[in-house]
Image 1 (cartoon, rainbow, N blue to C red):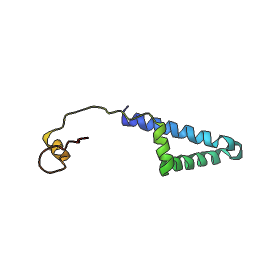
Image 2: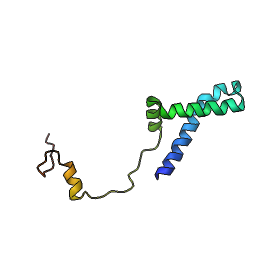
Image 3: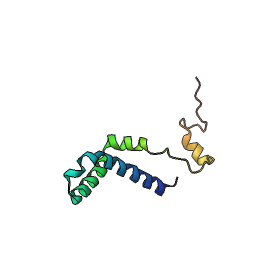
Image 4: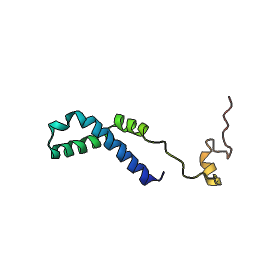
Length: 91
């Protein structure tokens, strides 16, 4: 899924969550009030650390677009001992 499509899915899920949360209160707001409340809740759901994490869990898993090989520079960056050797975990 390309990044733009993921944003579209995220926006759709967010909009559905807000609509569901507002459903019991729809009759209490004017049309303009509903629009303002919907916008405020979308912002709150998307930016609050707890609800943003929950939203991320509702979205489809991110897909790696391609795999690749590590070049020498990349492998050197993984070298945590500075001796050119890759660390091995022994259990």
